[in-house]
Image (cartoon, rainbow, N blue to C red; front, side):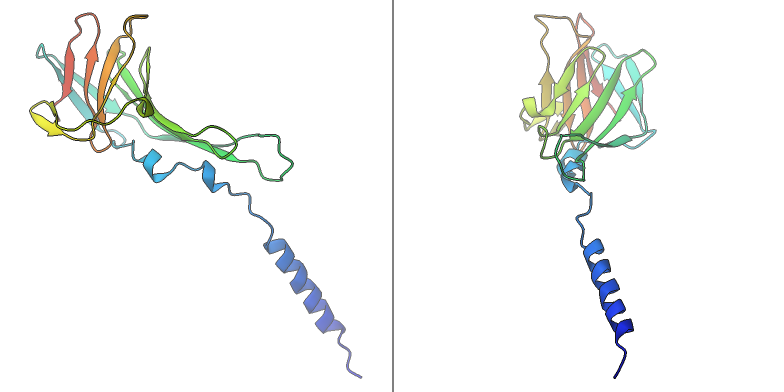
Length: 187
């Protein structure tokens, strides 16, 4: 009679390993930024942007490093895996306290859809609130898929009230209130 205890032990260990390795992974891919949400980031860290006003003044901005947050989101389920929310942003600022925070975040199935937006000192411009337009002339060049985003100037007085933005070129133009003029990207 052959002793098959080692064979049984191998089969039992193999079965346990299969069960453990087939356990659901805690990788909520739905919480990661999608290719479309990432496409709003058209700048590189350290990039310099130069804008010229309709009064021939120049303003220089610098792009910060991208910051990414990947955080679990509690939704109260009994599952062992918490869903994730990923967000990313970078700051574009000058030396005069004018700045833009270009942000995108993606939530998972348990919370509302993510969004992409620009925050200025005193206004938020959500890209989904606007439709892209074609044949927009800025600084002598014609652009397509331009988001011309305007904010309310009746109920409050934001410093920047209008931004022209494309996924390919970033900020093309911004307009200031109170006679601050129009500033177009020249580089």
